Length: 112
Image 1 (tube, rainbow, N blue to C red):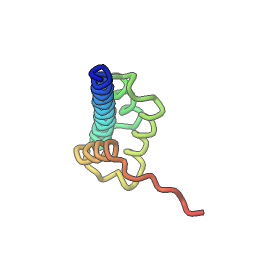
Image 2: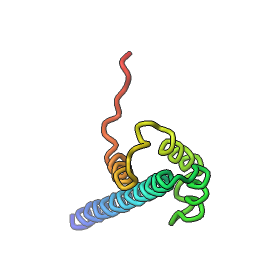
Image 3: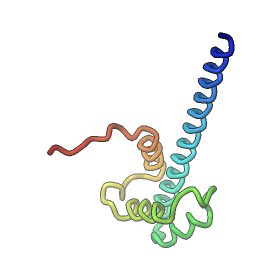
Image 4: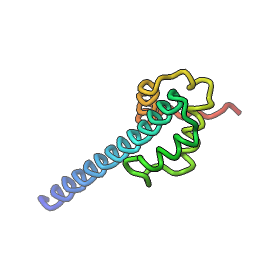
């Protein structure tokens, strides 16, 4: 009986640890995306080009392999050219990125 209780407790402990690792990875991913948004918005607001922002992001990102080239380009293009984001200050934009990344909300399906 004790062996089964130990096995269950161990399995729950491993599962909880895996959840903590998953949460930590998600937080790290979201902070990296926020860093990119903040950097791109600051460069945009300083009058630098999207090409300059991409070059800077690639050479100065804390973990250059964390975000794909495609993601970086799409994010920078959105920050520079999406009318809804053009007036948003860098600090506010990075906070919104973190919130949307950590709490994406429900995924709805279109009506058929």
